[in-house]
Amino acid sequence: MRTWLPAGIGVLLVLAGGLWTLQGLGHVGGSFMSGAREWFWIGLATLAVGIVLVFVSARGRSRRPR
Image (cartoon, rainbow, N blue to C red; front, side, top):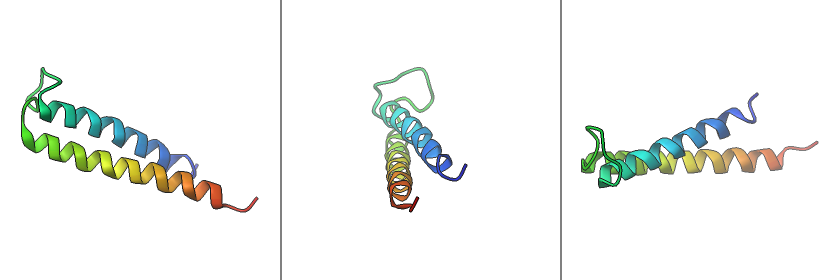
């Protein structure tokens, strides 16, 4: 369970961060976040944390001795 949980959370963060970034830029409408620059920055930060989490969890999985 510990091996896939960080990767799964990282993927969810990447998806949410990508959506928030696009909404902040105004490319995705229909929300209070659309066109608001602060959501662009929040989305970028979330996206970066998600990418790091996926990378670290994938790297940790390959280093484990069998």
